[in-house]
Structure formats: structure tokens, C-alpha cells
Length: 532
Image (spheres, one colour):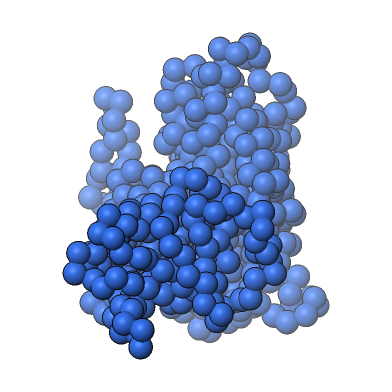
């Protein structure tokens, strides 16, 4: 999709020690980056930090095992958190857990009915806008780490000295990542950046914010529990709208991330399988007190650029995260936030489609507009809205352009017939242009419309032909249709008596269909000669 500076080492070939070592270190790096984000998103959603961590563990583990794209990382995300917060504020976390269960069921159904295939309808400019917008969102989200509570329920920037220290450490982490990716292939560059910066802070005793300043991550294994809500119709009316929105956002972000990772790694992902994995993961998460989750583009980029290419990296990331909660919370809480911010800044650099800036003036203005629009809506609103807006605008632009492409070349036959040789699609957006091609009053007695290079795509096209035929009929002239394709015939058969044409011609080299005819005496569609 785009060129990006490498954050780490390419994957070794084969399944030897080097591959396993790289996959495990990549998983460890991802797990470290998951901790502050899971905590932060839990705070945004208004639930306990462990709810975010449990979601990151369960969703990450299940999708790593069963997902449609090895190397992808899933967990608690900000896109879901901003939707969840109003539900938690109004009804409490137990309703959230019930909603996550229903969200999982909806995603499972999307997988069963193969709805993931519709992600292919997302145009390339929308994909670029999604990537750029999400990179900007990740970048802006890091500024929260540079603020502290102001004592009045809000947050203010750190004191200048502390702010300068944190920025310096973040820059150091970025420098180490950049140098490490060029000097060694043994350790993932993001992990090296975290280790060097953490060692410097601990060795010099620097007073900087660390993971423990966000919240304690110590806890036990997630416990199974049915959400404590009344399982009534009223509850369903409360949670269903949220579940639909969460399921849509989760699948859109996951499938777009799947396509992005698949393109970077030059492999193929399985959309329906990913829908099933996301649904199963959220279904389980809701019963274990998790806030739900989906694919995370930032952590997926860290994993891929660190060399993680197989399911082992995602599985190890989830297990490392759980081990942090159970056994190593004290060590993880000592990691300076500046180191993780530096890693995420490098993720932003690697995620943003810088190539889109170079080609911005070379692509059609409509594509450039869609790219900018999707990026802006992703930042201002959320990913699902941005993608839907981008697809709708792209579809409208395509329809408008297609409506202008229908035209006709006019010829005269030896018999004195006027022949219109059509070219371009005939559908709802082009019917006006189609009608403007003809002049029933001035045309001769016999008029032929040749559909060899066109297609009738919908009922609006059928009706346009019928309306034109009526005009010729009122003018006392005969209209002939040639080369209507088999798929057009299917449309005509479905239209039945809705459409009538005065005269139909069936030349020996083509296919013609009487719109008003019954097909009892006609040959079946599959027996008709194929013209294309």
C-alpha cells in the first residue's frame, strides 16, 4: 500500500530457533505496548483497567489462534471505547459485558453469512484515508501521556522540565529504534528502544512517569460470570443498538487492518474467518468481564515490523500480557511511558501513507477529496463513520462519472434505417443522458438501437427503454433492439409486464428480447449464444 520506514527485523525463513526467537520477542514487544493502551482505553470507557487488560488478553489470544491473518494483533481499542462510554455511564459495566456478548454473536453471524467479502467494496482512496486518519489518531492519542491531573477533575500539561524530559526520552527511544533496525537483526528494534530507555531511566534514577502511574495492572485470572442484567426484552432494546455499532466498528477496523497487513506482508487474509474469530473472541470476552475489542493497527504494525509473521507472535503477545498481570506487574509498571510513546511515534511514521502526499496532485481530484475526507472524519468522528462516508462518496462519484460515459455512434443502413450504436452502461444515473441521444420526431421510420457495447443494469434502464419506445410509437415509427445480452434478458424476464417495447428485431447474429413477451416459447437463457 505504501512505503514505510522499517521498525525492525524481517522474519527469518523456516521454523528454526531464529524464527521462534523472533516471534517470541515480537510478541513481548507488542505485549508491552498493549499495557498502557488497554489501561487508557478502559479509562475512556469508564471501566476498571483490568477490564481492558482482560479484553486485550482474551481477544488477542483467540484471534491469534483462529483469525484470518497471522501476524495481526487484536485487543481493546479506542474506536470501541468512545462508543462504550455512554452505555457504561448510563447503565453500568454489567450492561457493557452483555453488549459485548451480543456484539460477538452479530460478528459470528457476519462470518457465517460471509459478509466480510464486502470489504472489497472499499476503494483504495478510502483505504489510504483510513491509514492516514488512524495514524493521526494514534499520534494525537499519545499527547494524553504528557498531561497530568489538574486537581479540578481535568488534565493539564506537565511542568516544563518534566515535559522536556519526557520528550527527550521519547526522542531517544525513536533514535534507538531507527539505529537498531540498521545495526542488528537479533532483537526487534521497538523492544531494544524500550529496554535502552528503561535502563537509562532506572540507572540514573530519573523521576519520570511510568506505567504504574496510570494504574496497577496486578490481578488474577479472569473469572467466568454471566452479566448481572435482567435478560428481558427491555434489556435487549438497550444493548442491541450499541452491539450493532460496536460489531460494525470492530469488523470494519479488523478487516481493513487485515487488508493492510496482508498487503505489507504480500500474503492473503481470510475475511470471513476473521469475522468468526472476532465474534468468538468478543462472545467469550463478555463472559469474563472484558470490554470487547478488535484488531489494532498500531500493535499490528509493531508486530509485523518486529518480524512477527505467524500466529506464534500473536499468541505469545497475549500470554505475555497475562503473565504481566499475574506475575510481573511490578516490573512492567516501572517502564517509562516515554519509551512506549516513542514506540508509538515510530508506529505513526510507519503507518502513515507518505506516498499519498507524493501522488496527491497526480490522482483524480475526486479520489484526493475522498482520501482527505476519510482521514478527517476518522480523526473527528470514528472509523466506521469515516469508511461509510468514504464508500458512499466514492459510489456517488463513480455513478456520476458512469452516467456521463454513455454515448452513441450513428450510422445509416442500406435499407434506410438509422442505427444507434450504444456504448456505456445504462442504469439509474445515465437514463437522462440516454434519452438525450435520440430524436423520435426527426428520426426516419425505422430506427435500430444496437446494445452490443452496453449493458442494461437495473429497472431504471429498462424503464428508460420503454419510455423511449413509447415516444417512437406515438411518432408512428418502429423501434428495433439488437444485441441485448443474456443478463439483460434476465432483467427483462423479471420485469414482466412492467415494460413493453413496440417492435423487437432479432438479427441472426445477435440476441433480442421483447420486453412484453412471455418466455414460455423462448429458448432458456443458458442456451442463448454468448456475445461477450
